[in-house]
Image (cartoon, rainbow, N blue to C red; front, top):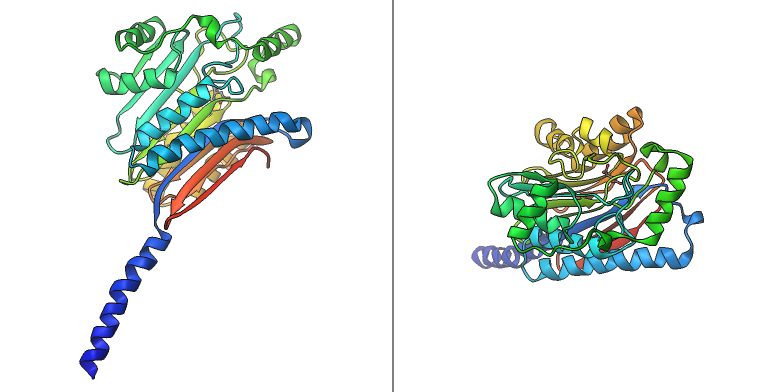
Length: 331
Ligand code: ASP
């Protein structure tokens, strides 16, 4: 009798335990942002809100199909950002803001949390997808960062798509530029947003992060922000988290924001939520550094703190076979 009971309990445990474990397990996850700033429900017409929502959802669907089919987090990050770079709503690729000279200068970076490899480009004007140029630097060169003409030459050597600088022009951004130029020439006064970023966790437990931007409206010719700086705007480490930032880049560089969040988890044992919130809502806020981050850890926990009025953001998580997703922009 005892033997029967024991066997029954064993059989029960064998069937039940994997089912329970499966329930709480995140198979893959992806988080995206489209910039933080003065994004308010009351000043956004409903059709514009819908356009943003649709674009963010489209990017999430692209990431989902890659990750669901066993693609890597790096592939998902690159593909999502490529789509957002082509979307004129965001300040990256087509739709980038103009610098003080009335030109578009683009920055991007990507990092693989599995092996700490990273690549970035800054100040480029002729590469349609800066994020792919950043990935090429990571995978096909011995370097981490290439800038300006050298980065463009490298992208051409890698057969990446090149465009005339006018490809990045949008009337909306040009009007913003003319307005700001007429009233003030400070980047702080401009408060532009729309940088894009993505962090992902794939089925193999690997994290990746990427960020792409036109920088800040009215920035000086040659200015480089945080987005292409590994550790400031982008960071990924399988042992802690993946981070992509958006906001006033000078503050993010000085505070090494993305790495700081990772280090607080790794060396101080903070949770993702605690580390991200501490850096954005305490450290940065006290200094007047405005912006936000999207973060993901290897267990699929996510954090998206921002200290601005709003941040375009979306997430998708496959947990125990269920898909959970959302898109938000306001507080
Ligand atoms: N962080 C970007 C930069 O400073 C701008 C942004 O995220 O809106 O270049």
